Length: 262
Figure 1 (tube, rainbow, N blue to C red):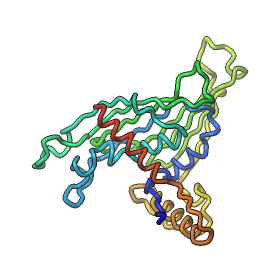
Figure 2: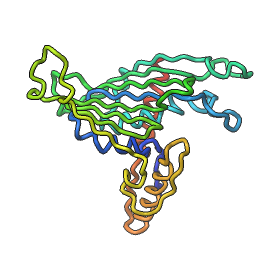
Figure 3: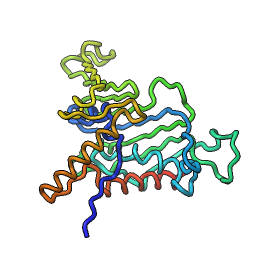
Figure 4: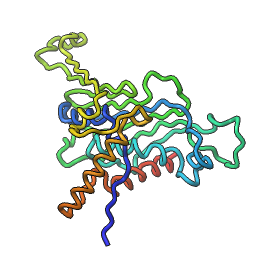
């Protein structure tokens, strides 16, 4: 018996994040990845399961596994689990509600870690590093999600719900000759990508449902790709999910290690 598994990691398919992923090769070797989410507290769900640590493994597992999946996907590397460092705050939200839980869930966190070095990396150069910043009591922030990737030759910034990506390239030695002063404005290039057209970003020719939603149409895109993979399996016998079971497990492992390191 062979099961066909596709793990639901819809953040990969958010248009601005998908565009950021497409632009990664343009910034050279990645050195820093920063993901920030400033949002409202968990919404009320059946029996408040999403606020029960015993059901979810806590916020860094249930909520942030999606972000840890992005760290792995963007970097193409694995997190050094032995070096994960975490700071959290609890008991900030839901103070007006009665609770049977002795320890409240995580409301905010900083999680930092290095990535394992690849064999191609210079022995003198530090490994890439990642930082997750989460605040579950930040309603009204200009950006709810920010994904910023800095490489040796440039930087890519994706912002939501703005749904735009900003790409920058570092000045060359020729364009920034006098290093005793900051680089000339004209030596730094900026390109802005409007990612509001979901079909264009994902190169989807057929009609696809688009909606505001909470994940910027990414769920519809993932369903589209999943159905395509099912048809391909039916025709060829090949099962090639874009998000494998191992991807989901590895993202959860990072969340568990981050929680353990508190």
